[in-house]
Amino acid sequence: MPLITYLPDQKTLESAEGETLLQAALRAKIPLTNVCGGSARCSTCRVSVVEGREHCSPRTPEEQGIAEMLLLPAVVRLACQTIPTGPVKVRRLVEELEDVDFDTLYIREAEPCTIGEEKEVLILFCDIQGFTPFAESLLPYDVVYSLNLFLRQMGEIVGAYGGSIDNYLGDGFMALFEADDCEAAALQAVGAGLAMLQRVQDLGPYLLELYQRSFQIRLGLHYGKVVAGRLGHPRHKRMTVIGDAVNFASRIENANKKAGTRFLVSHDVYDLVKGRVQVGKRVYVTLQGKTGKHRLFEIIGLRSESV
Image (cartoon, rainbow, N blue to C red; front, side, top):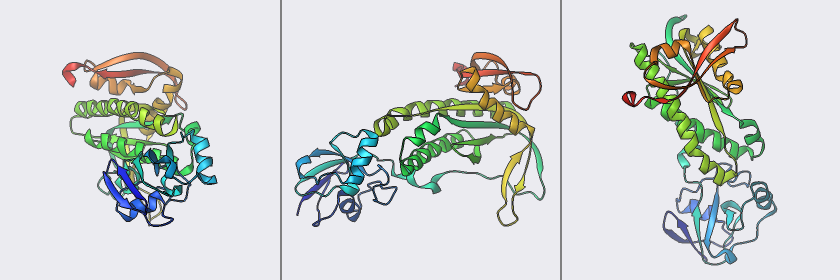
């Protein structure tokens, strides 16, 4: 029977007759990602054939279609479609297995209240710029994998900076930061936003390697009064916040489009962190649904004494 060596696991095993690279890996408990369950409806089980390419079965029509869509080189194969006929050595190309699990997304809910509770919080809106063309050019399962990868990493950053994700909004989300010291909470929220921008920048090469495309994000941060309460059908109520401040934060995030920026904050936030942040553009904008002009500030970094 053909021998298969899996990298970076450094495991070698004998495959059964007619067994695919994916089936052999799963039988040996090698964590080879397969979001679609090995049905050639995604590309997450892809491997690079290091040795023995001549011992791999030809691409199936399903695999060929995916390879043409993603411009995969001949050495990259879908493990679910490849049957070895002789010794081969392959390397797993998608190793972030934990990012496939939706249960790893972190949502911290506030304490339940009967009707509602008024409080002042920092509201951070995050949205992916260019996600629609990114998603339209990929297979659905690859979109799910990429989005889950992004949301998980953003959730970790928000949590590390003392915030919580209140709601997921398509390819974006709303996060909340609250503390007894509003200046400290504002600095944490700004730090989270900057860390998120950097993480997406770091994620870019990985997405480019997998899909020949990546994306950026836009952020809007505001400090204001909201009402926190349990909303929805009696059987499916969940904690969330509502109020004008929430809408205002959303409009700030959207204002990045015209301003040509990535991270804008309101004057209320700037008053809490001025002198401790590096500011780029200062813009006056008209926000949809709001009267008058509003001054927004582009955050490009923290001052060294605030790091």
